[in-house]
Amino acid sequence: MSNDDHDRWLLCHLPLVARVVVAVFLISVGIGYFSALVQLHFQHAKAGEVLPSPEDAVHAYHGVDGMSVLERLIVADETLPFNGAGSMRAAFTTRSAGWRRYVRNKAKALNLDPSDPDGWRQAEAALRKEREWEIDAIRAWIHAGASKDTYSEFPLPKEIYGQFPESFSSDFFFKNDKDEWVGSIINIIDTRCVRCHSEGKGGAAAEIHLDKFEVLKEDYLIPASSGGMPLRKLAQSSHVHLLGFSMLYGLTGLVFAFTSYPLLLRLILAPFTLIVQIIDISCWWLARLPEPTGPLFGKTIALTGMLVGASLGGQILLTLFDMFGKKGKMVLVGLLVLAALIFGILYVTVIGPHLEWERTAAGL
Image (cartoon, rainbow, N blue to C red; front, side, top):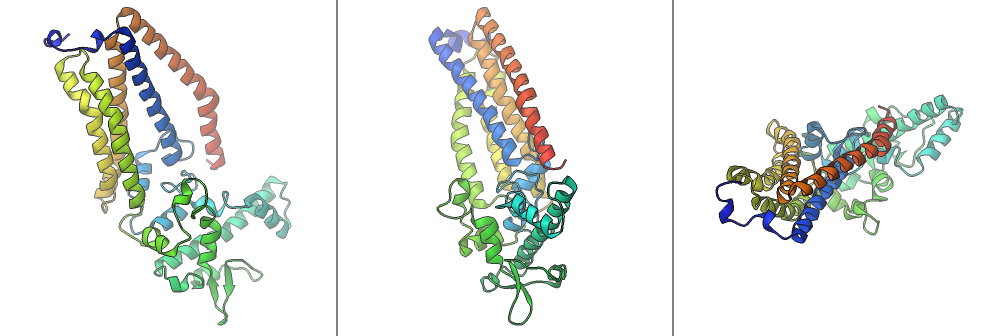
């Protein structure tokens, strides 16, 4: 015990029931943080990776310089999570409506056997090429100013329509009265994007109204120095984290402050998680700065996130072991061993196979 332990109130002086309640609270926070890591995997990590890399953080919070949000999402690697922080490219391919049916139809049109793996791959490659033209048309329209006047009939650059075969027909590309190839950008976005991103649809995607040109233009089409997470979503995430997690980290830090560890350790570790959390969220915003500053702050997010997890884990474990005597410590050790065994079983039976499935599905 430190020199001031006899003059202050300590956790170990609490009644047993109160200490058990505090212990269960700390364990619950630890499990909740682990759940947050699972969510982080699905939101930002590449296929087959447990957690996002520093490069993934740069992609999510800084983006690609000179690109609008929409362009960044439709050109991003399909192995990234299918969300607004990762990639929406799969909305044109594997996650588009009736993808497998369209592949089978393409195989028949090319006189290929869709039941044969090679035939399927050839048909899928041909269909992907056509979907690439849709993405290229949207990008060309954005670079041309994303005008509402050309939203329905955008004059296609020759580098796009020059790839069309003679017998090519599409719901999105056609010739106008001047016998010029044009693209219906509004139909592409309605088909690939608005079917999920519009008012009245279910889920979080319905909060983004891509069916409204004004919203689309203002938030997702203007090329900027950063094409990272939209400001509205970033502000919402910052608000939730600063209020929600700060409350939890404040409580775990306050509980740790009443342990019997030396004053210097308590003075450093008790507020440390809160401080690093503030730095972490600050980096979310600073990552939007132009190169080279923005990407540096983006990479720092991975480090600050690790420090938040490590300091929270330290607070929880050290506090648990400080509250109980020899028998209580033995129970805690047993629970930790049990937790490690359960995690090992989950990794072998669920987590590992899922990561391998992600790699296979992404063609890695």
